[in-house]
Amino acid sequence: MDATPDSPGAGHGAAPITVEHVGKVYPDGTVAVGDLSLEVRAGELAVLIGPSGCGKSTVLRMLNRLVEPSKGRILLDGQDIAERDPVELRRRIGYVIQDVGLFPHQTIRTNVGTVPRLRGADRKQIRARADELLEMVGLDPARHGDRYPHELSGGQRQRVGVARALAADPVVLLMDEPFSAVDPIVRGRLQEEFLRLQAAVRKTIVLVTHDIDEAVRLGDRIAVLAEGGRLLQYAPPAEVLSAPASEAVARFVGADRGIRRLAVTRLRDALRPLAGTEDIERLPSVADSGTMYDALAAMLTGDALNVVVTTDGQPIGTVSRSAIFAPPDGQPRDRHAGVSADAAAAAQRGDADDPSDEQAVRGPLAGGPKRPEQ
Image 1: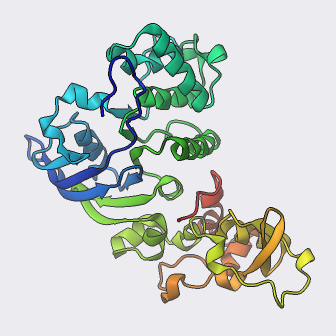
Image 2 (image 1 turned 90 degrees about the vertical axis):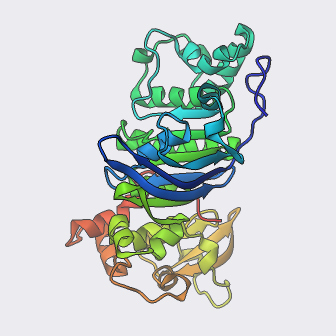
Image 3 (image 1 turned 60 degrees about the horizontal axis):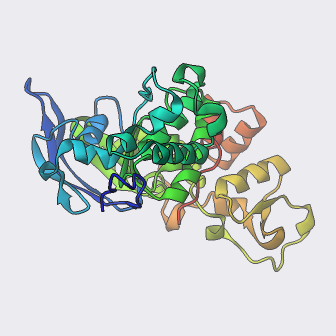
């Protein structure tokens, strides 16, 4: 249900998106997207990733009719978006872009309240909604609300962009490389805050990125696209990493995908009973909310072959290094399966022969661990 002018933040929740044989061909004959079909479930975060020119941003813009498809149809909550007024449609869809796009002559609070103001909300409601969202994205309304965009850092402006996109409680949030314009440290912090925010608001999100680590960390499912918007694989991060659908996907996600997979694999998947384990008190420990990557890091730091897994500080089992490097789901290893335990250990010590091996170990932790697959 759309929010009325009297209730700019009425609870829309989330809506599913269905893309059915959608294509886009420009007048000069350029095929941006050939024939794409996929579905994004309500409350899911889907990531579109692929090389430059694969049509991922075009797909995003077709979802809110900034670009009109040449064929096919797109359903939002079961309704063909071609039947909706494009202006009203876009007011139900939040949009966050790489350079944020804040209005430089408006205060931060006014920027955030843009869509509620367009929907006819009164000033009191707009201010309350803007302040609520600024707090939600980690900005103090009293300190930042009356400032102008140029007075904020890049990371703070990006937070404001997310707040503005959420102001009218949209059913869908579109994000086009939202964190690429900030430095890696800020990017990692923004990604962590974004995961926390998504856990609270549970919007349907489609995010475009060129960064496979970001896709693995943030996405519930990843759509790997090739030139012309051709869909190579659409699956959860762990499946894309452990079972690439083709050689092209394997090359794109990288030879170190076996290490990346650890960052989305739950510790409980390899948990062994405590019985028979000696010197438990001398082993490094990891909380059961962590991932296999956390366990590997603890083993390398503690020069151990096992870690103790704990819940509220109490041991519940162990995980071995051999379990970490076992092929997923009993699959045989192939030449794309990632680096060896020796290479990982060498990279952790700082004496890796191949720089790519070091990056394989450090890459997924550059911004902190991703939530494990459920």
